[in-house]
Image 1 (cartoon, rainbow, N blue to C red):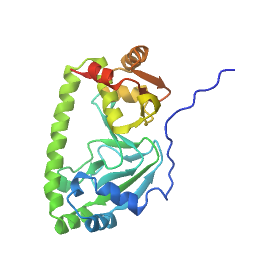
Image 2: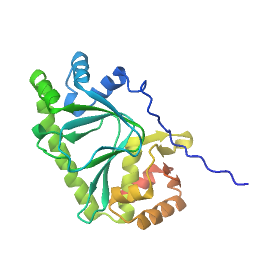
Image 3: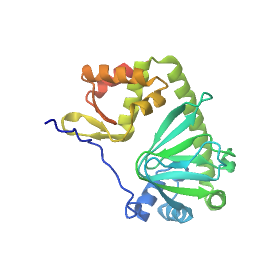
Image 4: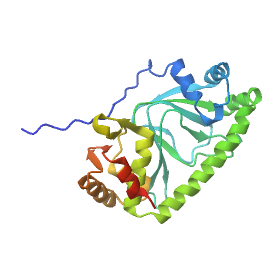
Length: 249
């Protein structure tokens, strides 16, 4: 009898003991808005935050809802999506601990432009407009950092648009796997890198702006060439250097 292949992914649980003050403060210290703050000031930021848990598959917020909170991932992972005019959901990014999302009117948005869904059990920290205003009053460096964050986000959007326009489907998929290896990769025996994230072929298709069938063919080809290994909702990179060459535009 054939044995069922088990997923190598690390499956997290919504354990309230995981999202501790120490974990939250460590994450906040690495958020672009707060990197110039002292340890005591980070403690103050943590006091302003609301802590929320979400089960995998649940929405943190939806596109079009009023922009009322700025969020930071404390533990777990989420996906940032946006719907096209045809109603197709496009995966824009994978959010990991230390990544921020959401919006506030003070940052130039009256409504959320994207939706965010928990990929795994998720703990997020959030700031409403009153809390953020109080932080700006007491920590002016946060306002300066915010300008840099907005500039980098704009440049990132332009780069992503260029990459989608110029690259082939194979290059897009390879580039997405390289990016995910850098952001979520776990080094394993033999030098392979597990993408420790439950992503389906539809998710990869949305992330790369290609059809699911194209993603499946590309993954099969990369696997046949020995660059990756795949299973149900998981991918392991076997030859990162070769995958980077495939991704080069």
